[in-house]
Length: 300
Image 1 (cartoon, rainbow, N blue to C red):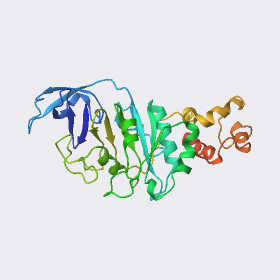
Image 2 (image 1 turned 90 degrees about the horizontal axis):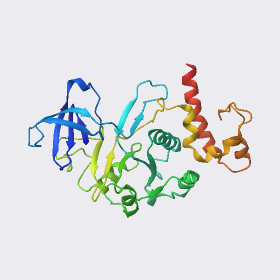
Image 3 (image 1 turned 90 degrees about the vertical axis):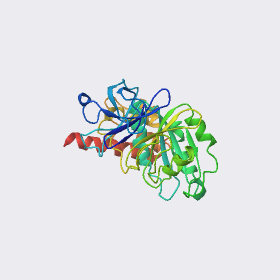
Image 4 (image 1 turned 180 degrees about the horizontal axis):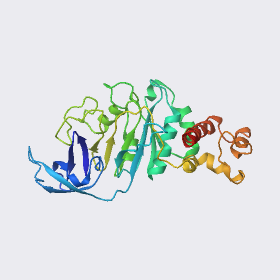
């Protein structure tokens, strides 16, 4: 398994637990290997200092998390491979929650076939209930932690440990939400925020500009990713957006044939559901903003 990528060198962990640094075979091409990939190695796989193996094969991926810089960016970027859970990290305050970014992550998780988990941090600085209530209709699992200061450990991570146990989870969130502090608490000694030598890989200097997979105490992996400012969805079919909003999808059965559920649909059942109080207007607005961004792209 590839657990880190740094300047053309790929840090891998073997089934026996050896840490092996490798380069890719020329025929694989640039960018063919990402964190989370299962790969075949040849050459010096001893893991000794200064040794270098070669990646000659990438096994079929069970999942791929992709994003684009913006909704009109044609270039897809693979974030990680083979993760089965996306942990969407957001804070109660400082910085304020960004529900539209959360919604985008939920769409990306649905598209990748990954289970979403909402992790709300800094609960000691504010009430997480309004944010949790907003996503309660989706039945998305959620955990709450207190991570307001990098020098103060979380009050309790038992619930989060339970959600991560035995899984390969990728943490996604924008800068300042306490993601690095959370990772350091989950994997003591990793010091992800400062870019020090990683205790799991034992090699290299991995800063917040690159993803890295860390073995959890017990069983499972957590993949830390750099803070994001946006999560473009140019790679996702807009017709599938509604499926990631399960609370909205249930109401669209009453829509006329061919309804896109967008701003310009005069008989969309989503508007009736809002008027009747069954749906929160901000949930419908967030969905329609996503849809509109893709419709503008298609019209360019």
